[in-house]
Image (cartoon, rainbow, N blue to C red; front, side, top):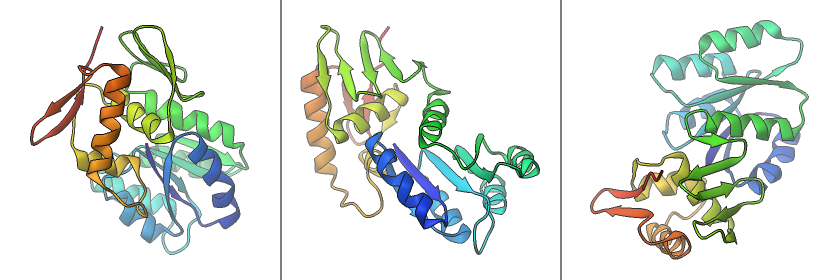
Length: 221
């Protein structure tokens, strides 16, 4: 999953990057409101983490501009704990959640996970499709035969994205946009290689190829 972190505090950014990456997310960072608003309109992110006290353009204005442009990007706003009015204004503008500073990174991870899971059939940090289960905490998948497989970072990100978008046609471009940050080399052949590996692990019929369109992870009961 691809996250946009809009935050101008370099110490906070540095403290967040490693645990977010360890949790299987790819992150792009914007250090001011203008850059953040621009990136948030690129339609490549799954969630934005948006500080309200930004230089050049404050976070509330960024959020308002996104919503006025019908940009439905899920947003977690970061605020100082005593600025309750900012939180209220953020929700009225279209924020999905908020987190008061200072905070523990574990709480941020929990809120990101909860927001991603709201529209999916999942329980806690477990994603299911039929007998297949993906444990986000251990980054392992249990297949239909009951075997537990440890996933690489890319395998985990790809399978999680498939499970959160079960039944949808996902193009190679969309997959690469949501699996790699802006600084990465995006090679669609790499996606094909990882899909081949997932098919070998999960069964070849789990992921359907739609010629000229992309891939569909099938819904199973």
